Length: 126
Image: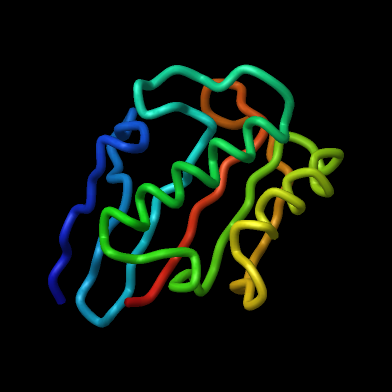
C-alpha cells in the first residue's frame, strides 16, 4: 500500500500532527476533520450555519486537491457541539452531498478544536 499526503492552500493547514487528507492505494481517500477555519487560519464568525458552510467549503477544497468531489465520498462523520445544531448542519451538508448521500454518523461531543460547533471528516474513493 502507498500513501500520499494531499494538501491545499485553499483550505486551512493542519494545526496538529495530521494531514488535510491521505490518498491511499486501493482507491481510498481519508479526509481529516474539517472545522470552520478559513484558509488563512482564522475562524469564521457567526452561527452554526455559517460554520457549516465554511466546513463544506473546506471539504470541497480538500477533495478538489485530489481531483475528487462530493460524489466520491462514501462515509462521513459529523461532530457537533450540541444536537441542537443537527437540523441546520443537516441542511447545509445535504445541499453539498446531493441526491446520493454517503453513509454517515452524527455525534454530539463534549468539545471541538478551537471551541467550534461543527467538524466533519470523510472517506472517499477514487
